[in-house]
Length: 178
Image 1 (cartoon, one colour):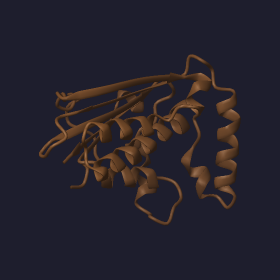
Image 2: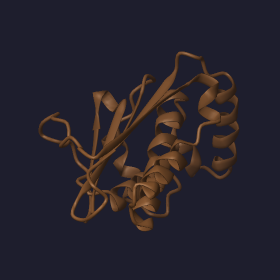
Image 3: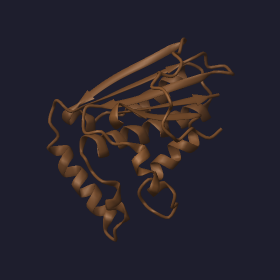
Image 4: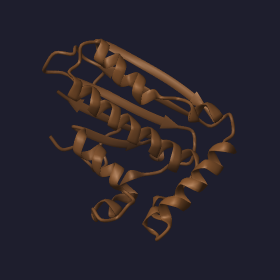
């Protein structure tokens, strides 16, 4: 099932989950040492979720967290990657800005799920206190699969059942039906 990749008519939260949840808050320099996506996937596997679901959560969490760090907290433009030496410049700037990241800058991630047996769903949410970054304003990049920028959004769209960006681009949320 493909994700809805357009603004939601209302800002209502997705349905609350019931069986379990995880919450992580990371800030400043600790963002570079966190492996939240591993923790989420491992926890789901321990809860009895099938490996393909755990792998999707790992990928979705990785993309969403990296977008929040790179574009929200570090204010790196994806368009850098489209230039000739873009990947090198992007990751050099990323390392510089991570080293200078102020302690009050943070990312909050949450994951909740219904029972691991089908049918069910899980919800993954990533928020940050940096500058907002709206995925909808960056969809032009996703229309050209040859571009280096915007591919993460395409992946999120393909793997999730629902996607939304709220709070001026400071919060992204997906729902994965299984």
